[in-house]
Amino acid sequence: MGGSDENNHQGVIRPANFQGGLRIGGGKLVPEIGHHRRALSIINRNLVGAPPYPSAVNKGSLSEKDAICEKNPPIPAHRPITRKFAAQMASQKQPCSEENKKPVLPALNPSGSEDCTIIDVEEYRVDTDIPVPMFVKHTEAMLDEIDRMEEVEMEDIVVEPAVDIDSCDTRNPLAVAEYIEDIYAHYRKIENSSCVSPSYMEQQFDINEKMRAILIDWLIEVHYKFELMDETLFLTVNLIDRFLARHSVVRKKLQLVGVTAMLLACKYEEVSVPVVEDLILISDRAYTRKEVLEMEKLMINTLQFNMSVPTPYVFMRRFLKAAQFDKKLELLSFFIIELCLVECEMLKFPPSLLAAAAIYTAQCSIYGSSQWSKTSEWHTSYSEDHLLECSRLMVSFHQKAGTGKLTGVHRKYSTYKFGYAAKTAPAQFLLEMTRL
Image 1 (tube, rainbow, N blue to C red):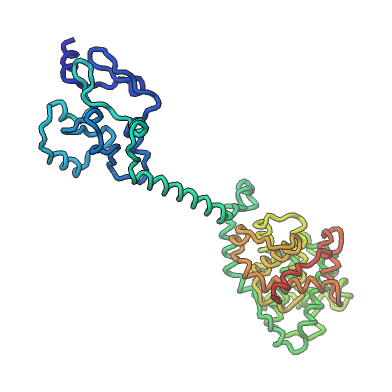
Image 2: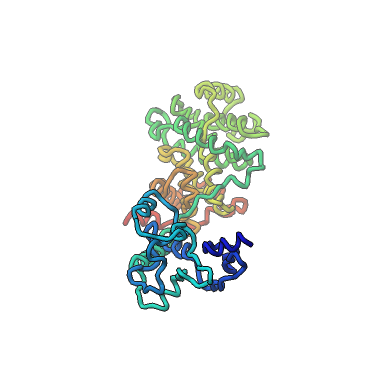
């Protein structure tokens, strides 16, 4: 009990419950602070942009009744003591009682009456006519303006994120999701080595671009009748172009080159390979078995056994996945890119660009507008501007696909098996953009 009287005499306040009130040594309770009040530490912490140690009220305008220890104000519990602030406090040589030197909450005298009152800022603002400090008004207006600017920016600028197209294949070992990006980075690195010059026919003395177009259009029909895999067709055309770019061929041997290239592609891609006799039969017995095998030896040595090359088909599969394709988009994309196989001028584009442009053109044909997404741009590395030149040529091929003598691709994709993709209207607006 003696310790309690000493505490009461010194007026030290011991916090018992910050919400319920303050307990004084002898057991008396100071009337509770209402729940509608907030501590000065909470108020000052909410004043964003205020000085490091803002004053809650203007001391010069307070009356004696509301003054807070005029001689030497206590250090607020919420304010950390810095060296600068401590130096300022030490420089003040005003007389002060022993109790006031302690940085604690305002003390009470033994009778229980208050010498120093705790000012509630919100109550003080209501009861007096003193205006809110100017920096508070500026801070609130500034925050409101920043909020409005952020809302406008979020409404005007909508960034479309790139979709992780491999997340659904993490448990599929055949999808090799762990290093699929490395595989396609390698394809992009070596794809130019599998390309040939679009003017390589100038080196041939007995054949020309029209004869090449006739050969490939015929091979597309042969490929369809044998029900071979898609990659076999693209590799066949690649082998023909690479061989003709290095070796001169007479006109009567051109079909033999095409048949032999398909035989090599089948051996590389297919599970069940057509026999040589079937290829001789499909060519109307124009060549013998010996001639086919001799041409096979010549071609494989000329190409130095390099059969592993990235064709447009390789990129088509990856880019279609990035475009989140459906069956209609897939069939129309393949229809457009097979039209490009016949055209010698399309050899100037790398396989990855041909694949991306075919998908872009198919999207424009189906939806009537550009649908090139950030995901497609990310995985193809081609923006819409990069694709426009190639895409416009594809639209022109689409327009004349059913006319003329070379209609093998159009007939193939006019069947139910291929979804009547050839009957889709071409993306005419892409050509009109060129005229503008």
